[in-house]
Amino acid sequence: MHTVVVGTSGVTASDVLAVARGGARVQLSEEAVAALAAAREIVDALAAKPEPVYGVSTGFGALATRHISPELRAQLQRNIVRSHAAGMGPRVEREVVRALMFLRLKTVCSGHTGVRPEVAQTMADLLNAGITPVVHEYGSLGCSGDLAPLSHCALALMGEGDAEGPDGAVRPAAELLAAHGIQPVELREKEGLALLNGTDGMLGMLVMALADLDTLYRSADVTAALSLEALLGTDKVLAPELHAIRPHPGQAASAANMAAVLKGSGLTGHHQDDAPRVQDAYSVRCAPQVAGAGRDTMAHARLVADRELAAAVDNPVVLPDGRVESNGNFHGAPVAYVLDFLAVAVADLGSIAERRTDRLLDKNRSHGLPPFLADDAGVDSGLMIAQYTQAALVSELKRLAVPASADSIPSSAMQEDHVSMGWSAARKLRTAVDNLTRVLAVELYAATRAIELREGLTPAPATQAVITAVREAGVQGPGPDRFLAPDLAAADAFVRDGRLLAAVETVTGPLR
Image 1 (cartoon, rainbow, N blue to C red):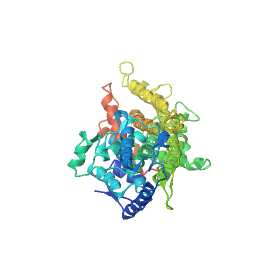
Image 2 (image 1 turned 45 degrees about the horizontal axis):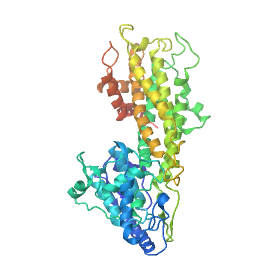
Image 3 (image 1 turned 180 degrees about the horizontal axis):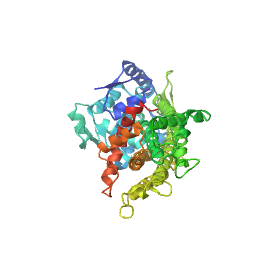
Image 4 (image 1 turned 60 degrees about the vertical axis):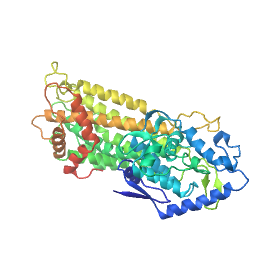
């Protein structure tokens, strides 16, 4: 099995995906173990001094003014984990929790937290054993990091709370640790706080959303090209020289993808035939501009994610010169903003796809296609309600595009008086990405049916490869009305698992 080695300088997005989704094993580098030990020596030295040091010998947050005596410090660290493990609501997905745990381990291994090497090793042991703490939907304000979610993970390290085993069954964490020969940790000064203070949940969800959107944006170029073809549109608007004079890289990539899909089509260029038009509608003609803007937003989000993956997020932090300093690096604003930006882009991509679908179904705008792509319109309703479903999904995408990061609600007796809401931004983006997949699946379903209804015209080789593959996947073609939900589910799976792209790329080669 693939192993990810965690050092002191951060991790990559591919590392996160390997651990969160691929079940990769985790190993601490010798450099990380040495850095952990060196930072711990600094914390131990400060703990032995009579002067109070935040996070080492004081309370936390609004209670930071109390100096904690040595005999109560282990209890303090246990208590912060127990009291902060206050999440509520449905369980968070396994891949999100694994990303959360791995990214906290990444920061711990930086040598800036003061956590002992044995605590870091236990974190790795839980990941390697496939033990996933139960984390709940609600509890993070995205400031002081994802406190409640991280606390539920730290609780499992202590052998408390519930966790899911590798078999998928939820059991007491103590039982799972014992079954895998893992000794629960006894937290010491600074360690409880260090396990809770980070943007790891929102960052993990950002990394996974970017991976999913990378596939979906290329898929959207394919479905847009198929719709253009089905509407007998012109591919002249995709010429690279037109996009070079407005040099947005995402726009150029999207146009190039659409042109590659449409190469050799016998359907494009008929816009001057029986119902001549000077230009195609915006939803067709401006597809590269809209999808391209989303791609460029993704590029910015990826830059932010890469910076955060290289960061050590904790408060206080241990500096190389021996100081332990308070800071505000746990604030989730940088991650929260891009999560919200992506939700806006996703909503717009879904919206333009729905407009193309609606155009395919409207006999007044589809340039010769039957109403609702029905077999016998009036007797058959065709894809009328499939578009309703798509419209409902798009409406939900618009609601999900309302930014979470523009909100803030004070907490901790006004000590934490401005929070990022980054966790909430990440949770709604996950839903948006899921729904965008369904929206594109409906456009794919409509466009392939419409192309097959253009008798006497030959689609592009890449288009034909898609039609062949999607029919083999159980998505039926034109014909009388039937139970549509299974077809839509099959189309959704075809987009979701990458078969749409795979089919196209057998002809076009890798899309951009």
